[in-house]
Image 1: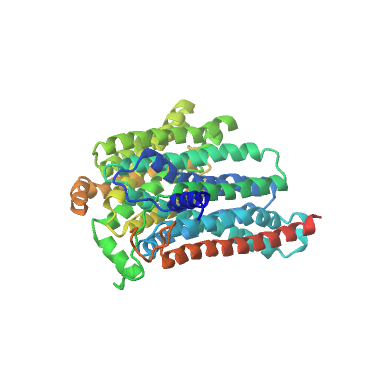
Image 2 (image 1 turned 90 degrees about the vertical axis):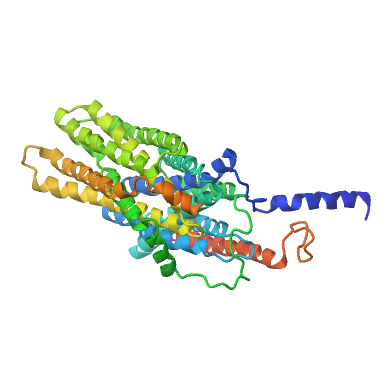
Length: 466
Length: 51
């Protein structure tokens, strides 16, 4: 072999492992750069969420003339997949791999599914609207295609988010977990807010071609973000290899073991109740501002930003206090406590026709929800039993996503029912909204009462687990 | 690890490990193919041959 060949050969040898997607070794500390990279999964999740719930919701109704009821059904389809997050988490925990991976294959498949859904979505929506030549086809073709696209995106984003959070839990030390949770939440918020603004600008001059470009661009960006997030994150050897003949527990065995330990059921109930309490007003704040407080469209749009800024402050404070050793459940309890004056302020703002009081209430709702969300997720990560991290994070995500979706729908239904029955009373048009906000205060009180037995217990549990 | 005779360099993977990695790549390619077929069928339904 001549000297040049030897040099080339040596270059290949030195390059080899660099082009393999595994981490060199499980390092004890997780540098911020690596953590930031991992949190890009949350940006892609936020992007898909805002596309489904916000942008496409409007595009289908306004630009594509799809009936609102059909749009409602399509948008709720991804939620059908939310309860399966616990199963996905379990499958990942129990995954057998020669390479020794248990998280990467799931995030890879989840990303592919999410990409697939987004790639076919624009065409499915155009066929659903009966545009072009598709008007000659049966309507079920468009409906089925759109349903498949929405289901795929839902399945993909629930998988990548669940396993992404499980991977973050695997990588972070107990002390670093509050910061990881804070970062994950902030990145989700950046993903949703940033892409909402971007989609708004890109789709301001709507055309079918532009719709294809925007949604398929999102699909490509999803793959890029998740690939960057995942590259060299999981060390080899975290999973059991196929040669291990030890029998793995079934999902029901694993679930019953998980639910019996550390008041897991109570923790999940608290997450569900608190999430419901902080989600019911989600689609009602803007119409309330417009109809009761007579705010302009521009002003009510600012409410979303106010809510998000409140959330950012909540995540920031929670990260700071929890990384100094505060009890996550005490933090979640504080969040629920902040929610009570927040909703009271929103109700009072209606009587006093005070936009400032309404804005302050909205900010406090975001702040309280931030504290509550951060506290409960940090607790879930800290208490995740060894070998059941995926299941624990999956159960948290399943309860959180399902109850949030259910609460948003329920909030709208309650508002309509109360408003149609109590139109002539003193409260007038505000009665429907006030009923929902009042119910949220009650739910927050129930959440706090259910959480009391959990206060202070986390320190002992974490000590026992570590 | 470097003195394991079953490992093939420069990647340092065994045959079984490289087969698993290859399976992921092939599965990905299959999913891509199915997605593109589905997307093309829908694009054809909307505008046959872009007319």
